[in-house]
Image: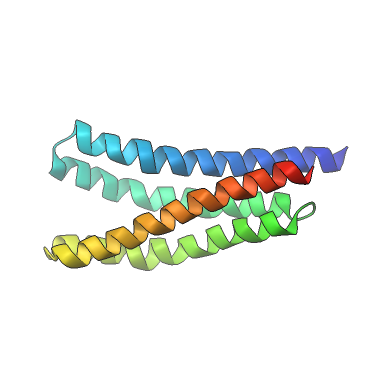
Length: 137
C-alpha cells in the first residue's frame, strides 16, 4: 500500500514539474511579450525567473526523493534536473541580465539560447521521467 502511495506521489510530483516548466516556458513567458510592452515584459520576466528556478529545483528534488525507492533511473534524471538548474539560476541568469543591461546583443542571444536549450532538455527529461515512473508500476 505504501509503495503505491509513494509511486503515485512521485508521478504527481513529476507531472507537476513537467506541467509547471511547460506552462512557464511556452505559456507565461510568451504571453508576457505579447501582452505587455517589451520593457515591462522584460522587467516582469526578470522578477519571475528566480522563483521559477526555485520551483524547478525544489519540485525536481521532491520528485526524485519520491521516485528513488521504486525507480532509481527516474530519481537520477530528476536529481540531474534539480542540480543543473542551480547554475542556470545562479550563473546563467545573472549573465543574461548583465548582457541585456550592457546592450551586448550577441552575448545575450548566445546565453539566452543556452538557457532555452537547458529548459527544453529539462522539460523533455521530466516527461521521460514521468513516463518511466508510470511504466515502472
